[in-house]
Length: 272
Length: 168
Image (cartoon, rainbow over all chains, first blue to last red; front, side, top):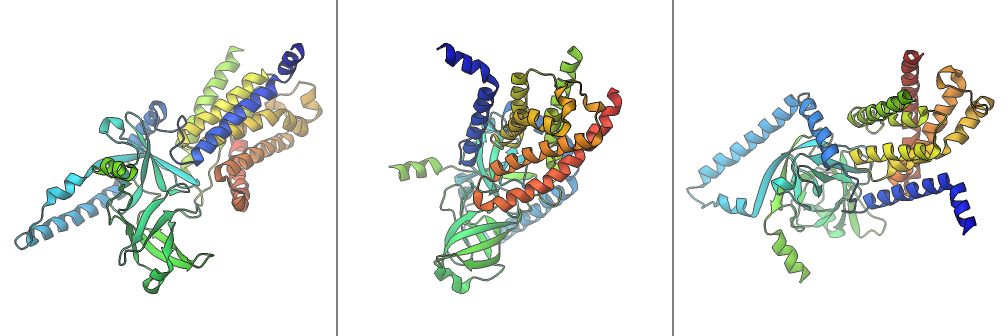
C-alpha cells in the first residue's frame, strides 16, 4: 500500500498528464461522431454570448453584399408571387398548405468556419425560439446544414462542409438519389456518392443537384449545387459526383431554419 | 509574485480572445491559421508548480476548443507541449536552463528561436493529426502542420520581440 502511494506521489505529474490527455482524446473522439459532443460546443452561454456581441460589430463589414443577396431573394420571391397571382384564375393554389407543413425561422450565423475537416456553425436562435436538433438550415441560395446542439439562445449547425454530415440528395432531372458527403479538400466542392450506374447515361456537367426530401429534414427541391465532374467508384457500380455548391460557404450570414411539422409523426411511424 | 499571477491571467484571456476572434478568421490561402495561444505555454514562468502549469495548459486548450467546436484537439496538443516543455527547454538552452538562472528576455535569439520552433511544430503536429484523425490522409496532416507552423512561428517571434521591450 505504502509503495502504491509512493508511486502515485512520485509520478503525480505524469498521472495528471495521462488523465487530462485521455480526457481530451475522449472529447476528440466524441466530436468525430455525429451528435455526441455533449460538453464542448460553442452553443453555450459564454462562448455564444461573446460571438454574438462581436458579430454585432463585424456584421457591418459585409452589410453591402448581404443586402444584395437579400434583395436578389426578394426579387425572386416577388416574381413567384406575381406568377402565382396570374395563375390564380386558372389553377387553385393553396399557399397556406405549404406553410403548414414547413415552418421557416430566420437566423443569423454568428460563428462560421470552413477550413477544418469538421466545420460547425453557430446561430443566434435556440430553444427559446423552439429550435431543436435535426432541423434543416438553408440560405437563399441553397442548403447550409443541419442543427446539432441547442442552448437557450444559440444553436450549432453541422455544416455540409463536415466529414460526418450525410444528406440525402438527388439529380433534378431524374429521381436518382444518393448521399451528399464532404472529403474536406475544398470548401466549394462536396461529393454526391451512391448514384446508381444507370443514371450515368444522362448525367452532364452543370446538372443541378437538389435535396431529395427522403430524410424528412429538408423538403424536396432545395438547391444544393451543380455537377462539376463525375466518375465511377472503385467497384464500378456507383457514380461519385463532385458538386460545386451554389452557396459561397465562406460568406454567409442570413439563413433560414426549416422545421418539418410532420417529422415526429414520420419518425414514430418508421420506429414502429 | 502577485504581479506574475495577474500577468498570466491577463495573458490567458487576451490570447484566447485574440485566437478565436482574430486568428481563426484569417484563413490564409484557404486553410492556414496561426495558433498564437500557445504563447501562453511558451512564455509561462520557468519556476513553476508543474501540476498547475499542466492543468492551465489543458484549460487554455479546452477554452479554445469550446469556441471552435473542435472536441478536445487543442486541449490535447497544448497539454502535450506543456508536458514536453522541460525536455525542449533543456535541448534548446542547455546549461543555462539547468542552472535555473535563465530569463526569456535575456537569452540569445538563436536558442529562443529553436525553442519556439520545436514547441510550435510539436503542437501543430498533434493538433492536425487529431483534427483530421485518419492515417490515409497523413500527407494533408504534414502539409497543414508545415504551413501553419511557419505562420505561427513568425507571429510568435514577432509578438515576443514587440512585448519584451516593455517589460525590461
